[in-house]
Length: 314
Image (tube, rainbow, N blue to C red; front, side, top):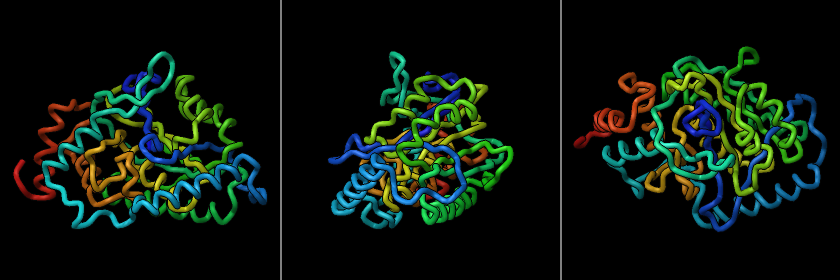
């Protein structure tokens, strides 16, 4: 899954970072979609293309579960990790970007980045596409609200639901609504690049979901974010997208094949935020870490904090 930072980190646009969940490493691909805001009752029955995608993602989820993936246990004795593992994973996930802008296109490319996080309270709003069924809206809004409260407890960052002065927008949308989301994204994130908007509007179904985070002063401090969750996903895949994207939008913008147990790993072994991931967020929002820190400095402090959290040698 994915996110966006300020217009420089990604080169997508000065100050933006993008992170997302895709199926590039899976035997079967996934996808994403944005919304048109409409709080009225949803249309009964999905439009044609959304129904096709809904059926497709149901097969993807079933295939992943059959392979023992999308675990919901948070990690256990079968996936031990040390303070050294934790610190190394933190550097790779928090100090690197998952995507880069190449020839006017966003491509998967690991790029070093200063430490990014939020320094001000998050005011979050969930917005649904017109074709999202009423019961799904209730489920998703409850899941997002509860998860945001969990992220707040982990990080110490104020995260509350709001309808005014919103700085973190979460869109849950179906396929037909995605193409109409461009103007809304430009309104929320002024100056966003055409490539970044295209990443949403023309999202391939091999991408499950994504998040953009904005650092307008290029100083490592996020001030706005937009997460896009595909409404066609079955319940567990949709919840998995919520878990990864909302956390990546807090500053853990990369994925790493070495991170385990973790949602920040494109192998999809774990579907929901793990104990390991909670510790990554604690390190990120520890007051001894500073926005704008580079990898060398951040690595030393992360090692100290990881030992405090888990014990062992730094």
